[in-house]
Length: 137
Image (spheres, rainbow, N blue to C red):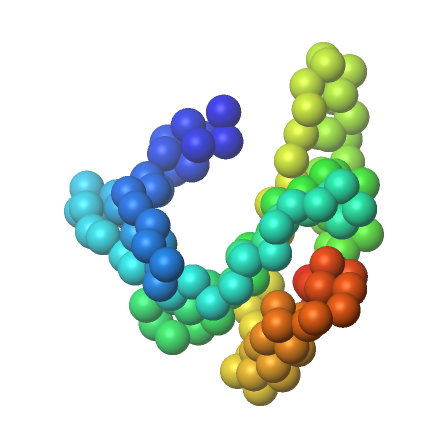
C-alpha cells in the first residue's frame, strides 16, 4: 500500500546500487530521474521500532528519512501537536497496522560528526550491535 500511495503521488523507485538510489518523478506531466547518494542505513530493530536512511539529494542537501511505529515516531516528532493521532486511532479501529514516515534536513557539520560516530560503530570489535544502535539514535 505504501509503494502504491507514493506512486500515485508521482514517485517510483527504479533502482539501487551500493552508492545510491534512483527514483522516477512525475511532476506537471514531466518525467525525470533523480539520483540520491546513499550515505547510511540504520536497519530496523525491534528495540528501535524504526528504520532510517540518510541520503544526499541532487541539490546537495542531506535528508534523514525515517519510517517506524506510530508510538515511537510521535515521540520523535518536532511538533507532537501536528501528529495525526486521530487518523491513526481510526486505522487501528479498522484493524489496520500503520507506519509513520518522518524527515529531517541535516546540516553538513552535524552530518560529518554523525558519520564519524557511525563509522566507529561499524568497525567496532566489541558490542558492534550496541554501538550501531547508539549511533542510530
